[in-house]
Image (tube, rainbow, N blue to C red; front, top):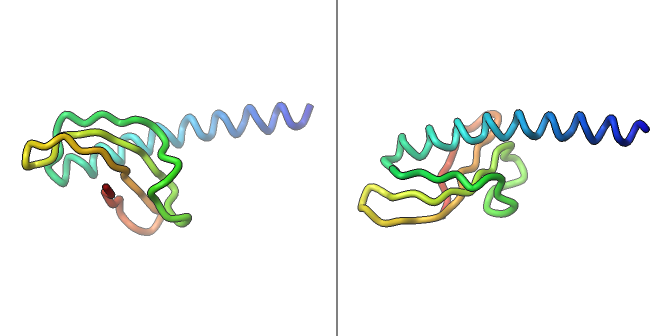
Length: 83
């Protein structure tokens, strides 16, 4: 029974965390001049263990090319865009 409650709490926490990650990721991409941003959810690879948000994306870069990558955000550091 305790495992079910813990699982439900973890799911709710991750759902709220995901919303914050998408807002921060989109803001970071716009700040770097990206447009037509499509966020693809949690990225399992591409960020360090110290990052708390890891969001994959596809967007148009300032040169007009469609690129894919990941936005990594930490508690202390700002978000970084990686390809």
